[in-house]
Length: 267
Image (cartoon, rainbow, N blue to C red; front, side, top):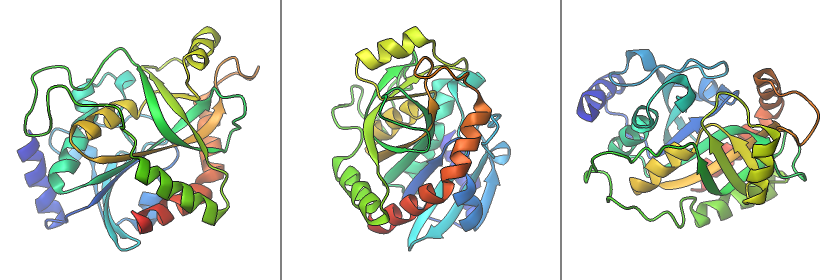
């Protein structure tokens, strides 16, 4: 499957060799539109699952940005769409085989930490897998990594320092925190969020963790950035909606883009 996918992509891109992979979460896909040189819809790529969620365009975009060759997923696939963990993380293995060394994972997330506000950007320092599944279940693929990968530093500390420095230069008050992922598609209950806070989570979402696990397994450097799009359930009295997520990410997309561009320059 990997070879079939790679053959198609390389023919379409004339063997474009990206060094950085970027996964753009809900409402954060404008960066790909602005710098797009080659775009391939997921529906055309062999073995890629389609993206069905509002705010996820669903295409693989190749571009030169800040002097770096980048491949971007303009929208991701989610467990709650009915895809398997292996389907969700298949693009990470494709990125690895294309030559990617560093993956930047982004998402929209709900604030569990009561000091966070919608519109904040949070650098992910660690995660909690509350999805009830793991993308590495099944026969191990020695081509990509070991049977029992170490998970003590999924989010690269040197990359965190680089993104922090970029934030200071841009005068962005970056937060740091632990991201917890549940399967969705329903939002968490107030009791679940209370539990998540108790065990150390700062923001909640329904993605990113499978890709981070797979990227770490494949030996890639990983950085994660969450756009805090709303308060998690029970943190405020406001009802949760995906529309609020899209509205908030739209408001902060300029700040988000500036941070990603500076990060790309320095990694």
